[in-house]
Length: 271
Image: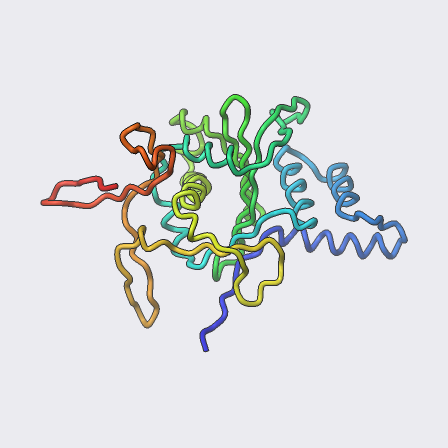
């Protein structure tokens, strides 16, 4: 019998504190019928220091209400592939957010005073055999700026599509942020490119709601390597892009994976 996979947790620290706080409030007889809203107000009044804190708590409340999608990655190696693949096209990712997100009001600045219309998409991502998972929240503004909120354990921060226009931004100067930014963008491109890899249901032993499994497409894998009885995929080098040309009559507007190969010692790009 194969060993069951253990998956990373999301909002672990939030849930630990929330349950402890609920017990304390129940003992005092002060717990309301909507404890997540009570906890949200308590957190904002006592602990919020930035818009990232507020965003994290808003997403946590949505998760308590079972509103967030949970995606379980079948193979941890896919994470590394998506972190390393180049990001050469954000327009297709914005299009996916616009078509699959929810219309909301979003904060425009750290003071949370200026509110504008936007489109929002958020989910929790669980990785096999890792401790901390990711919470990704994508907000597309009316001015076409895409902001991405990332929560990973104790770390949380915002990224902006404008950072890719500024080569001196943290996306380029910080290696860890660069990888996570690639991961956040490429996973949307991957899901859009290979929708058949995202299927309903949870891995064995997972009892949460709104669960999906994310498989590795054979189209991004060249071969499987075996080391010590463990089979690992060898991923192709490439990147995702959206087809804009009228030449692609049937696939115009779709995101595809472009993989690079070498022919006669010369790099070639194949679609």
